[in-house]
Image (tube, rainbow, N blue to C red):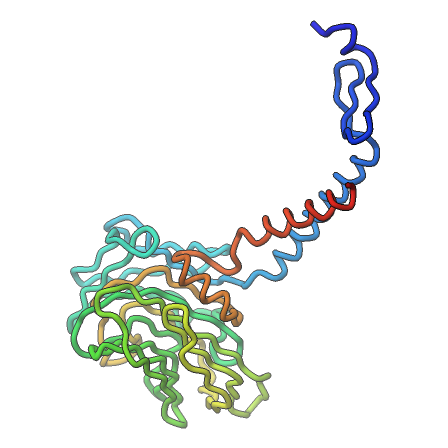
Length: 311
C-alpha cells in the first residue's frame, strides 16, 4: 500500500529527471526531449550502419554436422549453400578458427565443395564488379593444390585461383585466356598454423568490347597487406555464364589438383573492404564486416553527447 506521501505529486528538484505523481514516475519534459533525441540518433545510426555494411553474399562457416552433404550459407540472403562432393575422406567437425572446419583429403580423385552453378543465372560478376574473397586454411601437404577457385574456365583458361605450394607458399592468381596470367606469390606460409588469406579486386567501369581494366588488386596474408597491383588488362570472356565458386580444387579442368588440409570461414563480398577490415577479421576469426559492435559504440557516443548537452 502506498504511503500518503507517495500519493501526492512530487515535483522534480534541481538536477532530478523524474517526478512522482499518484505512485507513477514521470520524466520531466526536458528529459523526455533528450530521450526522443537519443532514439532518433539510434534510428539514424542503424540506417547508416545498414547502408554502409559490406554486402556479404556468401559465407561458408563450415560448422555443419558430420556427414552433411551441404555447406550452409550463413550470409544474410543465404542464396549460395555449397554442395559437398565427397569421394571418401572428407569431413566436417574438425576444429577450426571459429567453431569447426572442413577437412579435404586431397589425392588424385579428391573431394570438394562448390556453389554458383556455371549454368545458373544471376551469379556474382567476378569480371567487372568489385569483390573481396576471404578464407582460412591449413595444410602441410606436398605438391601444388588449389584451396579455392571461382569463375574458372578451361577454354580459354581463365578465372581466379588460389594456389598452395609445398614450399610452403600461397599464390594469388588471375588467369586470362588472352594474355596469360598474373600472379602474386607469398614468400612463406605456415605448414602448421592457420593462415588467413584475403584478396580484394576493384575494376574500372566496363566498356563494351574492351578489356576489363583492373584498377587495384590487393593480396593479404594474416592481416597484412602483401601486394598491390594496378592496371591489369583482363580480356573479356566469351558470352557464357559465370563459373562456379569452389573450395578444395580447381573446377572445370582435367587437372583439378585437389587440396589436402583444412578450410574454414569462406566469405565473399561484392565490394572492396578496407585494410582495417581485413586486420579486424584476422584478429577476430569468424567475424564479418563491419564489426557489429561499431553501432553500439556510436550509439553510446551519441548518448554521452546528449547527456553533456543536458548537464
